[in-house]
Amino acid sequence: MVAVRLPTVLRPFAGGAERVEVEATTVAEAFAALDPPLRRRLTDEQGAVRRHVNIYLGNDNIRDLAGLSTPLADGDELLVLPSVAGG
Amino acid sequence: MSEAVLLIGTKKGLWTARSDAARQRWTLDGPDFEMQGVYAVGIDTRGDQPRLFVGGTSEHWGPAVFHSDDLGKTWAEPPEGSIGFPEGADASLERVWQIQPAPAGQPGVVYAGTQPSALWKSTDGGVTFELVKGLWDHPHRKEWGAGFGGQAVHTVLPHPTDPDRMSVAMSTGGVYRTADGGQSWEPANQGIQAKFFPDPYPEFGQCVHKLAAHPDVPERMFAQNHHGVYRTDDGGTTWKSIADGLPSDFGFPIVVHPHEPETVYVFPLVADANRIPTDAKCRVYRSRDAGSTWEALTSGLPEMSYVPVLRDAMTSDTADPAGVYVGTRDGCVYASADAGDTWVEVARHLPDILTVRAAVV
Image (cartoon, rainbow over the protein chains, first blue to last red):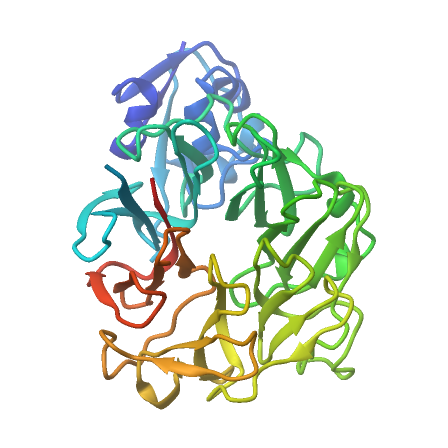
């Protein structure tokens, strides 16, 4: 199992949970396992991570790893953080 | 007893104003959809109960369309979302600019206009939308540009009685129309100036800011352009300027009176390079002769103002006497229950007003 940790603003899309556990061996698989209303906030309809959404594995942004193909091991935790953006 | 509802979409959420049918005293609820830019709202009054729509965009979490069947107390969207490009398309949805219920003869049909420039059709009352491929596949699409607000279909104007006919407007690109239910589209911009091109009268590429028409006279349409206020009397084949008598031909919204096809409203700004109200006064201009002459409406509006009104931040209801509504970029909303003669303040100090829609239900 891997975990996806959510910022407060996204928890309503996960039944209030701070942490969602899914079976996945890559980031893409982890997202695919999320409920669609939550997944759509993280990725657009073509599957790309939204521009102002950052996904961290440990201290690394997945954009600096292998993006959606970044491999995940049992017990890994993905941290979802909104970037500093907007007005 | 009937109730007036006014949806106010702002840069940072939705507010809902309510009044009795007199539309003089308003209460304000909100915000809902906090921190979402609510660029599109809609009110569908065709069914047994009104359905409200919100098109919101979070800078972080993307765009979505929601509907409400209890006048805004609760909102819903289908799990997979209401609207999105098909898998494999070379685009993803950035923003919903317009949610337009079709005329009464097309129950369940709701149109949406989006950024990037695309038209969408719903046949299930606005719960899910399908891309109108005829416009998306138009050979001109790669040449449609982006204005300051982005590249979007911001106006959808269905023909009141013929479901095969419709006009849309986009910035930039101009007006396009179909007569075969959306399969094929032709530009309809002859006479509309595009001062930002070497050839100021191109076939397409104009920056039309808003388009409006009265359902009783569908061949006549009005356009507020990026400089230029125009009227067509032949369904968009040719356009003529109706800007004489206005203090400026620049502005964003244009609205037609719900019961008087000759009565039209604009909100002039000084110029492209100086986007503040003319003479620094908050004034709506009204013509009662389809644009031949204009009068300034001032009663109840602020004496001094340096803030513009955006393209969708002016609207009318369909009550009698007609209500007219205007929202400003400094978060004020004014309502007139007498077709613009006098105005009352509905709200102040909200975020930038992006769009307003009203109905007496």
